[in-house]
Image 1 (cartoon, one colour):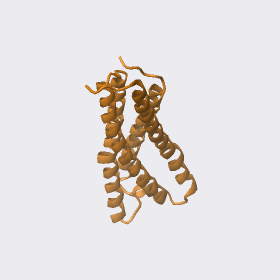
Image 2 (cartoon, helix red, strand yellow):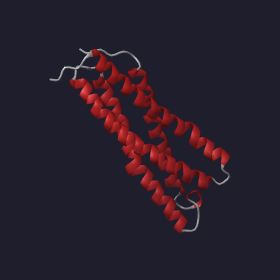
Image 3 (spheres, helix red, strand yellow):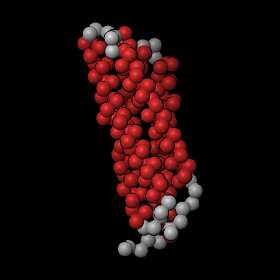
Image 4 (cartoon, one colour):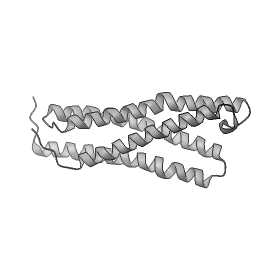
Amino acid sequence: MLHITAEQHQIAQRLFLFICSLWVGSLITVGYLVAPTLFATLNDRQVAGMVAGAIFKVEAYISLVLCVGLLVLANLLVSRGLQAYRMIRWLLLAMLLCAAAGSFVLMPWMESLREEALLLGMPVRYSPLAGLFSTLHGLSSAIFLVQSLLGVYLVWRLSRPMTVQ
């Protein structure tokens, strides 16, 4: 086993916290500032929804990449004796599942409903698909809320000092 100094542990923990803070900050900014501002500012709700959807898609992909990278780093820290990162891994896994559900299930399904409605010559909210779209949107919003709350808790847990055991 490679010997890691206390200073190197501190640097790794600070880097971990820094990345998590930026990521969770971007989740909160996109979900609770940018998206509502789009709908409040743009007169066309369909355009606002399409722009918000594109932003959420980028955010979901960022979440997937960062979650995987942070899981790898958390595993490394656990293997180096920082047992507090065992719980952190579970939080990251839960956040990864939220991002994956949005990226690979809900967003593509909602996009296909939107496209199908446009083929019928109407926005999705006026189409026969509006009910299903609304249900999926509500589910997507709930999952995003869970991911955001997990992220806030993750940053909160990371903000306290952790020592090698």
